[in-house]
Amino acid sequence: MNLQGFEQRDFDTFTIDGLEKRMEAIQNRIQPKFQVIGSELVNFLSAHVGNELYLHIAKHARRTVNPPKDTWLAIADNKRGYKKHPHFQLGLFDDHLFLWLAFIYELPNKKEIGKTLLDHFEEIKQLPEDFVVSLDHTKKDSIPLQNLELKHLERFRDVKKGEFLIGRHLSHSDEKVQDGEKLLETAKDTFQTLIPFYHQALQARN
Image 1 (tube, helix red, strand yellow):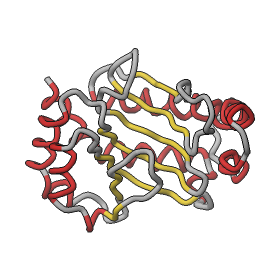
Image 2 (cartoon, one colour; image 1 turned 135 degrees about the horizontal axis):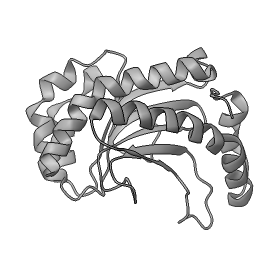
Image 3 (cartoon, rainbow, N blue to C red; image 1 turned 180 degrees about the vertical axis):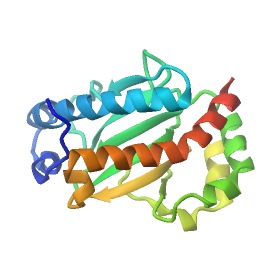
């Protein structure tokens, strides 16, 4: 399969009723595209991070009734899983594509990583102005970077369920989403900008 962007039909996947039918559409429409773009991003990030990274495509295996509202690929330095590690994500909700450096609640050393992010708060605030922040990976909402406050990172550090994801949201109708080459370049640009914070998190984890 060639590198492809995501079209309206891919986003319409999340309007399909029923777990089985929606999962079938995710597997047939979206995951082959994840495989291609994810492989490109793994090679790019491994070279720029300086160690081997691995592609994980969400399986949604724990779901038995409710169909997923979003789906994603994740890239992490652990071959077996990504949720307990700082990782990069590219994924879709029904109305936008997200590109994240993600620190989710399953991280075992959230306190140390949270402290490191707080120490570099001013650097985070200097990221491109179109960057956004999420405090819960299961929700569509995001906070514009300019509205990020210390209390958000303090919550991530101190609250068991606290999360911190930073990156970009692109509308489903954005030409950068629909064009595979443009999407890959946008993802590379977003992730490369975030690599310093990824490194800081890895150092805090060790």
